[in-house]
Amino acid sequence: MELRISRTGSLSGGGSAAADVADDLANEILTALTPGASLPSEAELASRYAVNRLTIREAIKLLAGRGLLDIARGRKAVVREPDGAAFSDFLTSLLHNDSKSLFDLIEVRLSLEVQSATLAAKRANRAGIAAIESALHGMQDNADAAIKGDPAADRRFHDFDVGFHEAVALASGNRILGYLFEAMSAQLRYGIQISRRGHTNRGHTLYDTIAWHERILDAIRAGNARAAGEAMRQHLKDTENDIRNALSNMADQPA
Amino acid sequence: MELRISRTGSLSGGGSAAADVADDLANEILTALTPGASLPSEAELASRYAVNRLTIREAIKLLAGRGLLDIARGRKAVVREPDGAAFSDFLTSLLHNDSKSLFDLIEVRLSLEVQSATLAAKRANRAGIAAIESALHGMQDNADAAIKGDPAADRRFHDFDVGFHEAVALASGNRILGYLFEAMSAQLRYGIQISRRGHTNRGHTLYDTIAWHERILDAIRAGNARAAGEAMRQHLKDTENDIRNALSNMADQPA
DNA sequence: ACCTCTGAAGTTATCAGATATGTTTGGAGT
DNA sequence: ACTCCAAACATATCTGATAACTTCAGAGGT
Image 1: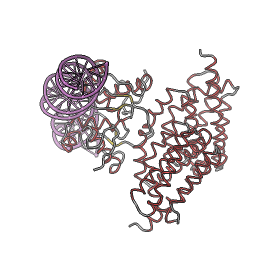
Image 2 (image 1 turned 180 degrees about the vertical axis):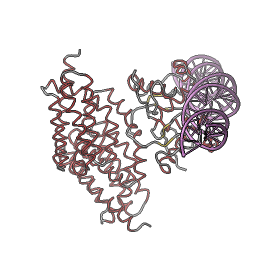
Image 3 (image 1 turned 45 degrees about the vertical axis):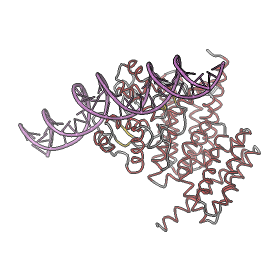
Image 4 (image 1 turned 180 degrees about the horizontal axis):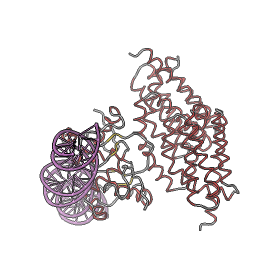
């Protein structure tokens, strides 16, 4: 019999009862159940696996943490639609510790988002393009107020900025790209916050930011895959320079 | 007071006690604790949060599922080194359902691995290159036996194949790329299994596979970033063709 | 002085039983 | 056919207790 390392670091069959049940249920969920389906009740699972109800509860909590289940009081556990949240904690822990990870993330974004833009130019349908346009309009509508110092408008501007990139990722038609982007979006917001300072330091305004995005959208709309990828690449390279500028200024003036 | 959606789908402060504790602990782990550090004992946490010890246990299980903690009997929970495992379930659930995701994954790999190879050519140190060479030698050592039908050698060959790509990702010096690759590696193994059939259908042997990898290694060793990226791109494009061939044959002969 | 073994203390794992609180559902009443 | 409500069901949490594992200091032997 082959021993397999489980997510809890224990060996299947020799680990804790809760971990064993969790692994077994995970297998069933991933292979036999579809999102939206309900698990049996805790009591029924307890009798099926011949363990205490508490053990079942802990197994379900493990799976909920893994993002496989949704739990709500009074209802049975429901198989969850997969999303990028599972990857988010991990990025958070990385980015919090060192600023090098900020550049690591930019490199990964560069890779994934150039690909997204390229594919979006090839495949985006009307709805996908409309979503990108909508995000761009949101940026345009809030730029003036944001520049004048309205913090709410500023936040909306950045939300639409993130939304633009997410819309491009979704328009790529590649679900994994979409999920990966979703996983990174929280950290991305943080990166944008930092890059913003360098952006103004370098004499740029939000209108320059909008111009970058317009260039990307135009290429996608025209179905020009190479131009879309290149526009995205240049935009992210520019953002990288903003971050580099902001970080070096923070080092000079550690206020 | 702003309400925030927690990982369990509940609202912080209004969700279950276990989910609230989990969110609070997650915040502490991500901001204040380093991998390897121990959490207080369950009893102490129970008194700190003024809840039952069982509630603490369930919160810890949630965090363990999220990949933030390692649990072992008799020991306090330990903050875990972040890794790509958190993303793995999600890919599993995607790939199990439809074959389109197989191509989605190839596209993502294309993007990430070309970037990895490019960066590895720029940055790889002696140890990084040695790891890539070691994987390649492993492939070479097992090729003959694998071709003759030795299943163990065949498996080792593929393990070294995956190991080659992982070594390139690590040699990129970008930790996020390394972790992303780790997250994909289980699914990648599955993809390689399928591509293998198409590989032989198209008249190729494992020596051709080795040749692709040699080309990538040579470019990295020479510090030629463009050539390394291009070699990786061509290798993955070829793999994509293998998979396409294998899947269409499976459709013709659904034995 | 060093090593090994042992046992107590600390900690997690699991069980049993009970109460509180939410959700669902079927039937009474209109 | 519709509304409303209570019973059944399900999860959330607590209390108390026992088993099993880890660690570490100290006894004892070399």
